[in-house]
Image (cartoon, rainbow, N blue to C red; front, side):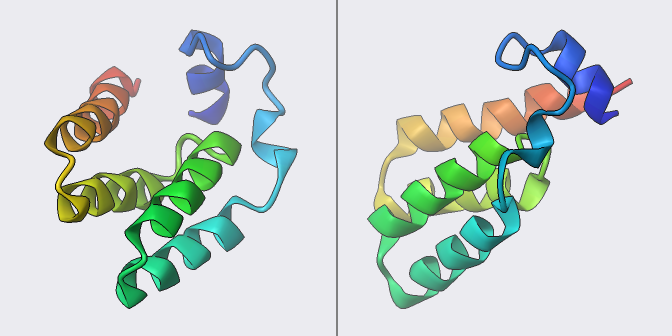
Length: 91
């Protein structure tokens, strides 16, 4: 599924993009910032995690939730749409 996503996504031209870094570390940092109330740092770390591994659902859902908590309804809708788009295209 990861190779399929890399082949259909315009953002990724190679099939080894997932090994660019430690996406889980950024996800855990984002969760820690979100629980402490620092939503801007949480959003930044969610973005880093999603850039390193765009098929890790907790990062996408955490990003959407952090946008909703910060009051950015437009960003929340965009983030949620990206998650729904990925799972409706899943083979």
